[in-house]
Image (cartoon, rainbow, N blue to C red; front, side, top):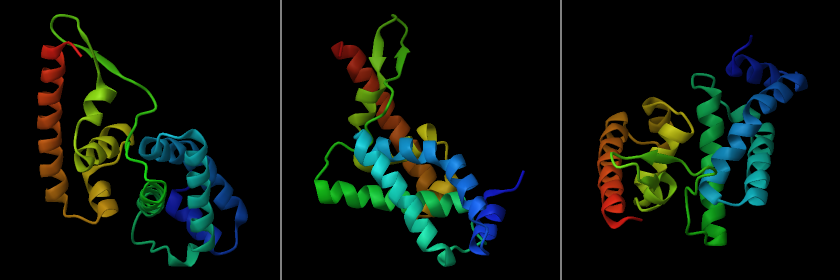
Length: 173
């Protein structure tokens, strides 16, 4: 099976079928990533499709020293952030599934609610790492920040999330 980079380079060199394969590999993940930022099904579908169109049109800008996925998801993220600014969407990182965990006394705590109580940067780091599955290195490249900043940001985001979960448990919410 060819890597995404190999397929994209084939596309750049004229193989249209290679781009279709890439779209099949990324469409679902792109939609869910957009939905995580936007919380709107229709807008998420539009933005994810527009990201593919942008990659298609600007294929010569791809630098094959980097992973295609990082390049693509950076474009998608930027398009989502632009949509948020344009539409004044204040609810970032709404999760498509509400996950629950049980604490020691079997109280269910809504993880989506807990994550929504974090600041924007913390939500983004948690979402990119645990819901979108990106490595620290990929997050570093996408956000254009040092990997140490990603790691320390993730440490504080998890610490803050733990505090929020404890407060929710104590308040019964």
